[in-house]
Length: 104
Image 1 (cartoon, rainbow, N blue to C red):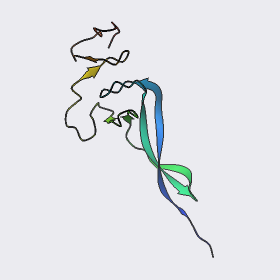
Image 2: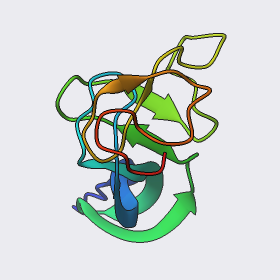
Image 3: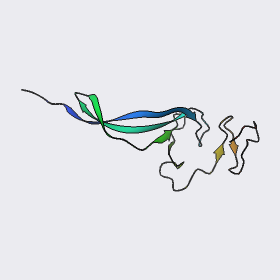
Image 4: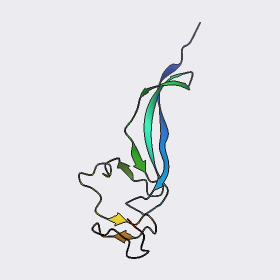
C-alpha cells in the first residue's frame, strides 16, 4: 500500500532586506514580505504555485500594511506620519523632521 502526502502550503518570504519604519507605532525594523504558495510532497516545498502581494508587517504592534500604504481593512491612508530616524509623529506636510532634522 502506498500513501501520497502532498498539497499546497503557504510560506512567508522576505522580499526586501531594507528596514522601514512602521507608520503606526514607529518601530524601525519593518520588512517587506509576501506569502507564496508552494506545491509540497511529504511536507517539503518543491516549487512555487502562486506568488502573493507584498505587504509590510510590524512585529511590534502587528499592523499589516499593503504596498500602497493602507492598513488592512482601512479605506484611507494612515493619517499620521512618523520620522524614519527618530520615530516621532510629524505632520504630513513636513519634508524634514522638526525634532531631529533628518529628511522625511
